Amino acid sequence: MLLDMDGTLVDSDAAVERAWVTWAAEYGVDAAEVLAVAHGNPARRTVAHLLPELDDAAVAIAAQRQHELQYDDLSDVVATPGAHELLAALDGLGLPWAVVTSADDRLAKARLAASGIRPPLLLTISDVRQGKPHPEGYLRAASALRVAPSACLVVEDSEPGLAAGRAAGMATAALRGLDGDLRLADLGELADLLRRARATPQVNACQVQQ
Image (tube, rainbow, N blue to C red; front, side, top):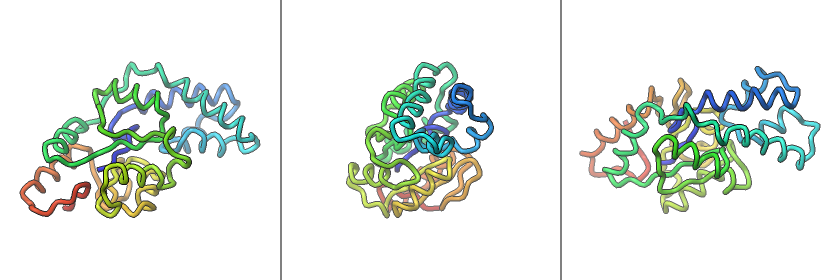
């Protein structure tokens, strides 16, 4: 099972929005416009979209500034409902799992630690050439887990993340009312599906079916 971090395993919405609002003020961009496109996208992609006049070097600097605004803002960062229940179910069933996130390495480790989550495998934007909606991160995670993409379930809460999972040839489970092969109210619901699948002798390593 391949899980996104922000909005999926970790409730960091308030911290993410605070950072983007501050960044928008610094760069003279309308905050509402920023928040409309930032969720689920790597910071560099969002910056390039909002400020197309910047060259690659300037985009990298602006994206790094956005990350810096988030590194120490962890006071209200917690695990999402059902997150620990799901991870316990995965571990209990011996199912491999990984976190694949658009955050950079420092931010991902800080937020996961604040949420009490220690993934066996973590892939961040620092580990790939192309972020979501490109499938590279999910394909690299499946390869590292030695699981075929077709046997993996991607759990996401954003359209770019779901698009990345689909492009990787993986089944998808969607939160926040989005459309995936599964639609979830929260991660606790997915944990229940896993527990029901326990009695099924042919459960793929990363795939859950209703």
